[in-house]
Length: 85
Image (cartoon, rainbow, N blue to C red; front, side, top):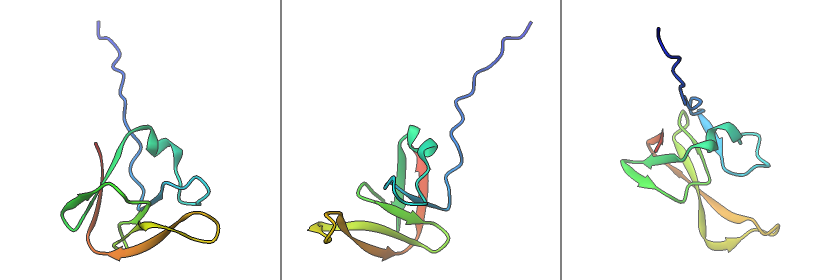
């Protein structure tokens, strides 16, 4: 007799993902586990949005805010890798 196995498979990481719940690229199921981003070989902890196919990430520009009170984001281009921790 075999026992059923429970798998805690996480959903595949999308090509583009945002942490802002108002964004069309926000996927709640992905954030049930911690997501890590490696940019140009170094792990970044301040990434707000990424796109693997286009090769960019968006990070806050210090403490600067836009006129709606959201962090002002800079787009950095390079090699992007997303993974579950």
